[in-house]
Length: 175
Image 1 (cartoon, helix red, strand yellow):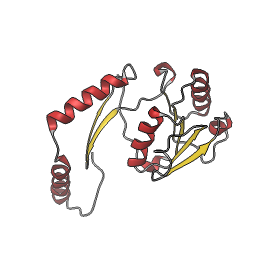
Image 2 (tube, helix red, strand yellow):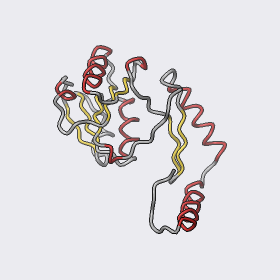
Image 3 (tube, helix red, strand yellow):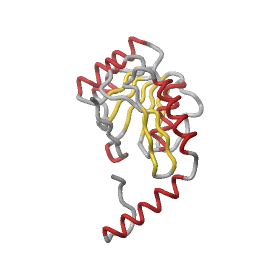
């Protein structure tokens, strides 16, 4: 049994190695979530450049990016097309005790990124434990179609009602 934990941007900066389509999806989710992201790859898709909170280093990955990284990374994501590079990234992150997701090897990963549906404060995550991300995406899309839009307003109303019951004002984290 695995436990899904939602990280907040205050957890720290994230290193994403790779600049292709898989990296784009991961970086977009992290950027949308307010994380500070550093992307390292010799070829980074143009869509990644200029995303809020994203810095791009257009060069090859070096083990020191993880091992000597300043600041210390909260998460590392290996999203290259090169099996050997992804393995090195995973090894380096695990050596430092940093959670790592290796896109082409669930067995080398210490966490998985779920397919996430977001509508305001509502978040629904689907994971296959790295077995088949495309299947997780299909399931997420079916859930989205079933739920339909408009949940942001429902969640905000529930948040205000809960705060009122607890005698609080202002925004608070969902439980």
